[in-house]
Image (cartoon, rainbow, N blue to C red; front, top):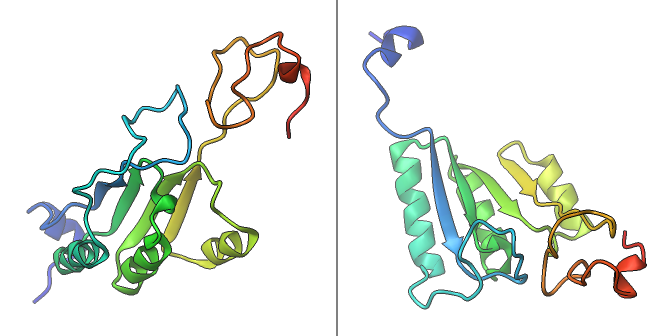
Length: 154
């Protein structure tokens, strides 16, 4: 006999509802405001097969979803394959990204998925903002007052 869900919860959960996974430390930007110590890929990074094995274990444990971050997870050549693999194995995916590698086609695909949530980091790029320069590799890095910082970037 199966107990009602409320009664099942009094005994606790058998697995976490959510896990956070720093899939890679590699990043295609160098933002000063980043909370991660990312930049270069760690040579000990898991292979695709090892990542799939982790996803298989999450499915076995009935983990509801995994938060994927890093670095910039979309710089991994196998990232989209891993997202598809996880959702096909009933593990939802939430990931944080700078959005650079999300094409319009990929955005449509992500929007159509019930098991994928995306968090895109948007950085203020208004020249009058009283914040330090943001990123050494994007267009918002120049010092306030410089000729380039007076242009408008969209």
